[in-house]
Amino acid sequence: MFYKLKDAVRLYGHYLSINVRSAMQYKTSFFLTALGQFLVSFNVFLGIYFMFRRFSGIQGFTYSEVLLCFSVVLLEFSLAEMFARGFDLFPSMVRTGSFDQVLVRPRNEILQVLGSKFELTRIGRMLQAVVMFAYGVSHSSVDWNFAKIMTVIFMLIGGCAVFSGLFLIYAALCFFTLEGLEFMNVLTDGAREYGKYPLSVYGKKMLLVTTFLIPYALVQYYPLLYILDKDSRPFLIFVPLLAVWFLVPSYALWRFGVRHYQSSGS
Amino acid sequence: MKKYLSFFRLSFTMGLQYRAAALAGIVTQFAWGFLEILVFQAFYEAEPEMFPMTMSATASYVWMQQAFLALFATWMMENDIFDTIASGNISYSLCRPIRIYHMWFSQSTATRVSRAVLRCFPILIVAAFLPKNYRMAKPASAGHFGLFVITLILGLLVTVAFSMLVYVLTFFTISPQGVRIVFTSMVEFFAGAIIPLPFFPANWQRVLELLPFASMQNVALRIYSGSMTVTEMQKAVALQIVWLVALTAFGNLLCRLAEKKVTIQGG
Image (cartoon, rainbow over all chains, first blue to last red; front, side, top):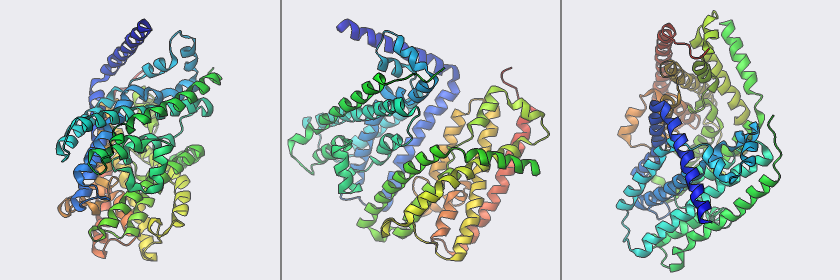
């Protein structure tokens, strides 16, 4: 078991090094694209900044509170993206039939799909997320204590799981549709984009859907209430970890897809 | 002129073939617009007096932004053009008795129009029947609507003229990724795609309105709901024309320069 895990990590590292070397063949383009990724998410921040230059709050949340919310969601997303965005290219793998090659190799197929492509330029967004996170935490008027720090860490773990689960579902659906479903972008990029404001902003129904159907609220709204002292019930600290369960149906769907996979390539 | 018109027609009919993609786009953009309006609504409820436009004008702005996304989104570019430069197939076009700039200009205008034609009506029609605060409102007057159509076309042409600069710059950089992403994220922000220009602080707004980016989607979408005064509208239309002329002239010049020293990639 331990040997297997070590082997998987080694393979993953090898994939990573191949991807780094290939990206470094186009250095200027790499740095510019990374800069672009940085700018794109910086735009979102500027949007928040300028809205709060005009307005003093949104549904009782102040600028610094929204900033903390935005930065945590951005970091959750970026972490998931680092590991699981390889699924982005999965539609073309299915269509061209290169998934067949993956299936005949004696290694885990998810590991291979993830290793097929790392979007290294996403490092720009990651950088942006880390900077934002530091800024958001230092600008928040939160009285940090052990419980709150743990809450943030749980949020990152849970959020990473939710977004990874969504990427996995996106890939699994390709088994049936043979193409990437653009609508899934609403659930991933859309959640990153609109998760900048606490979910209660979008109304009660939205909060209900994001609690039970796709558990964004578990990794954003509820623990945030605890951190911001708006709700002091201690179970909220562990609520984000519940979101990890989201990986179970996602993985089940993926397994189901793999079992029903019919090669489409020539 | 005739040959460029047929380039336009070709790309236009080709663009109309992608109906499934359009359907997916419609669903996505509808969700996007809805969330955007909910955010504005939440801000509006707390401090309606701070709103620079009426809520109904803001909702219309958001819906039109989603419906006409394909006209103004600078990140939607012709990948074919980038491919011809990177692969070297550009050499065939260079042999033909046509101006590359004009050909690409008509092609990318056509693609944008065809995409928008497929997408805009379902979005606008559904948006027109939503509850009051979320609804796509009627235009302020017939005159406003006429001017809206004219400025929409001008805005599209300015957007295409601007993205032409990115295509032409690819002659020098070969890989388009970098130039492209820096340009597009800049445009997004300054054109009012992230938040509409009236929501910026007054001194920012004064500067932003002079830039070419304000001549893209900003003018048409604000004229529609009557959120501009007559003098503001005159100035905005004049600026659109000035920028269109300046950007095409510059693009043409740059394209000539690039054609002279172009290196063909690949064999």
